[in-house]
Image (cartoon, rainbow, N blue to C red; front, side, top):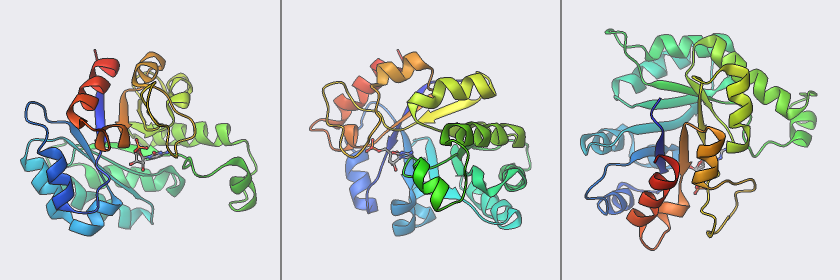
Length: 232
Ligand code: C5P
């Protein structure tokens, strides 16, 4: 599995994202498009970024009845994204339907990864709001295992969980980890962070990096630093 740095392009408009991507002349970073940009600009933004030669992780976190997810995934697959995701809480049946929808007539499909519990959900909210009484770590690993059973390729998780996900689901089950910061950088609103080098050490397969690159004085240099710490 190729290790790569995925740049979270959390911008509000096509204009902003293109002015950011225009800075990259010699490389084509793997780009994450999230809900904000997708809902603002629609599927055309995916086609345009793809046409510039970038790989795309479309981060829309689907969660609905299996039939709806299957049909929606089939639409996303035709957009030719490289990776997309859903909530494991939608059940194994929903995840299996998603794979069916994503799979193209020629048998290929984008990578599909699952969100286990959002990092904004802590033990207290899980217990009190969701009435899930088991320890959060156990729930996260259980959801990861469900994703594996359903045939998904991996999960989004904290770099701190990557090791355990690999122990539970196997080394080939991919870990995509946000919450990455440079040793000398701002942590911002991320609570549990790791440097790209630490994420590599612990076995993350892909790191998702937003503001340390998008808000850097020199985004290209920051991207190259991530690649050299994580991939080389
Ligand atoms: O700017 P920053 O590096 O914090 O961006 C991280 C990206 O990863 C954002 O797009 C954020 O929504 C996403 N993410 C996250 N934590 C999760 C899941 C996704 O930070 N648990």
